[in-house]
Image (cartoon, rainbow over all chains, first blue to last red; front, side, top):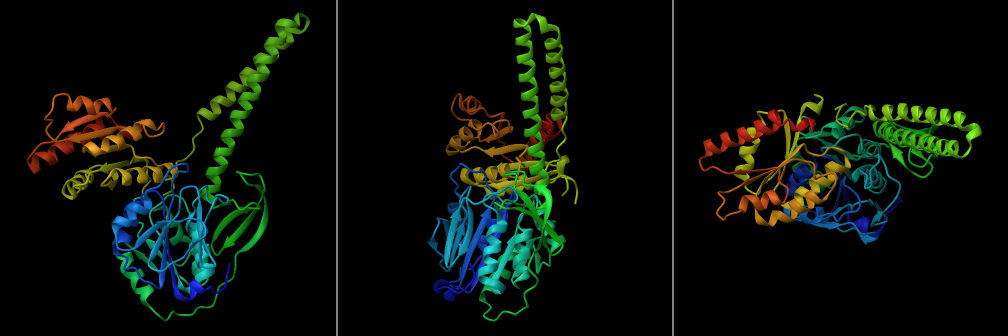
Length: 318
Length: 140
């Protein structure tokens, strides 16, 4: 993925922006203030639901002067253009091209902010500028860490202004952020950074440390490795599903609920079968009815557990 | 930072900047966070993003324009979105049955606009007070 390409020679800078809940407004504000430069390519990931057509490219296209395109796999990366991730597809950059693929979800999201940010950090190093706007949970922190590690610039929307401050706050708590700004002030900083011809060379920091855990991936059940990204941790499985601690907890909550409902189905089916057999096997009828009753009672207990399950919503730790 | 579950998440759809500014003033008096959309595709994009994060709005306010009927139909056709209360502001209804037509789209309330800016603010306050305090949409 690393190494110069003809396109990269002309494009000095990648500006990568990530947003989630509450992020469309600040993203529009940013696009409004961006002065498109031929020496920079711009990329935006806004979390969204799959199985829908997104109008994000046309919405952002109306907001400012930068040309906005929805990413298609393999399209060439051009200066003064903003690429936005398509629903249910990760967007990243590789060898002067934009990639749009259905890779493993990260932080339960596809598209994921981290996937884009890591690729920009690897390809553009100190000329990568990462911006995290409003959103819940922690997508973006791992990606910003990679940008910081390779000497790029890290920017977050001021959490006091963000509708959902958790994404910028998580980044602030875990990595060195160069600029904390209201959305309206971010474009002028980005424009100035893009215009800079010289960048301060910083030595690359250590890569992520990793170790295997005794946990399995809530999505595919593969073993999970713990990645230490500075002060921040992520979990990654063999397939590439990747989780921040908070998103892993949420994914486990979903898995637990599915498992409990499966137990209810198994117990209730067992009870139905035992009750039916009791009608046709009079010699064991009493024992079978007792078994059916016990299974129904056990299923009832599990139903109650699921119904009273108190899953904290994703804003509760904000 | 405060825990948000005492906060109303509001989606306000209005193309008029002055009306949006007034809405912002009124909503500041309630524990709320608002996202504004000028047009239907922005509103749909906001809903899709919020849905992916599991943070759908507690209520949607919409300033009526005929082209928004498609948005309302799409909103009410989607299982996870249809239960969000939808309050529609209309100008003075000129044609008979105009308000009924909007109710036929499954709006939860239709509020007719008033003229003076002071009256407008008062009407907005009353509407918000009803939905946030009396109907308590947060606990739907």
